Length: 219
Image (cartoon, rainbow, N blue to C red):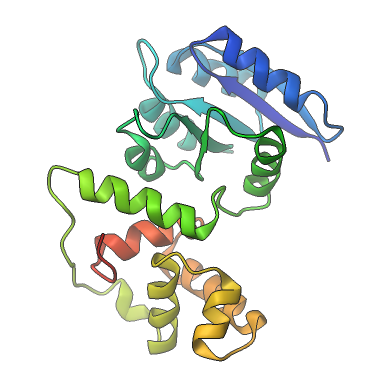
């Protein structure tokens, strides 16, 4: 299977760099490029990629709004947010808009290739611990920090599933959760799958966000 990718960045040099990296692989093909969010949506509709690498700060339609529109398509490709991290204040919004994770613009070539492959498989781009730090940073920086919420959504989980969700939100990997709970990694994978299905979550990134929103963990 060849993974089809669209590159979105208002700097042509950045797009060229990413294209050179991705074109070196046998299983990834760059099928389109765009310099702003509006062009990104058009390129996505035209080329039907599997993954969109999306810059945040662009003229006109920015990366957040473009991500939201692209994720509303059917079928919808995965979106990876490109960020400088210490400058962009919109990564958290990008994840909530439907992105499957983030990459730093100076990421290593091997990490870029791995990230594209990972999101196609249905997982989040970032390692759990990195995801936790990212979410904590933007939740803490938000004008109104999230407060614990109650309701029926988490009531669908068993006590053990709620415990696993809390550990996911704390940035634990499956192997770390297995060690914490003294169960097998396979059992943890089963719990994670059930949690995502019950709560209608796409991946672990959304699980981390939900954990913060419902007050299971705090920044």
